[in-house]
Image (tube, rainbow, N blue to C red; front, side, top):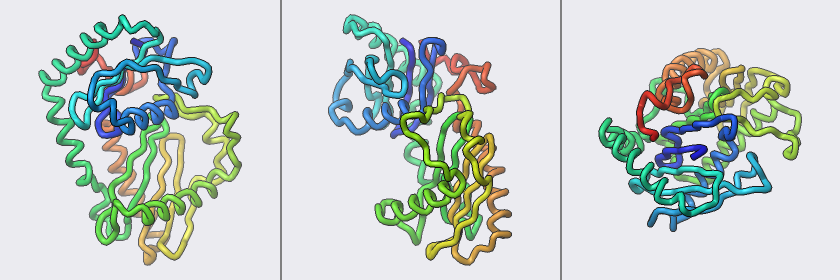
Length: 276
């Protein structure tokens, strides 16, 4: 096994990378894996052994994935560089070990509860002018956003598309140099993207539109895009962003637990004891 992933409703719960010299997960490949797993209905029905090309890691070759859903939301994915289907029983044994450990520490119930309660994550609920945000941890590559709440419909595609377009406008003002897709490096999970600071034209950008005040901020540690009510002043936006950032930094330990080895400054996966 070169990598193990525990996923819950398209989000990473834990990752094990026992040999980072051989394989380190890239953020682009992680997104590809998540989309593949949760948008291939047949995977939900049985244990599967399948080839998969992670193009950012190696566009000319394949890895092999053992995929099994432990519940309707929770998926275990184990990657191997070896094609042989004889590994299937070996990975089944690993699955049984992981399931046993998750049940022993009560993690399965906690994961399911977290999935059900995701809509309740509203760290900005008492900030009256702040309507929505997207936050990226530049070290881990993780992104976080709350669901839209009344009077906006989180399930309305048009609303979300307009919001993303506004964020894209702010992002372009901060990083105006068009990225060469062929030359663009994918971020290694757990490492900052070294080219980020070089491409930054502005660390803070304000943009008003018919729908509100949009703010973009970035540093070596984070990237933040925020949507404020049209009545918000820049001074009010700054004050509320400061409060929001303090809360999100506090949340990061919860978001990033079990992702990386202790040498990177994060808790060791082995502390949870869920990986064989």
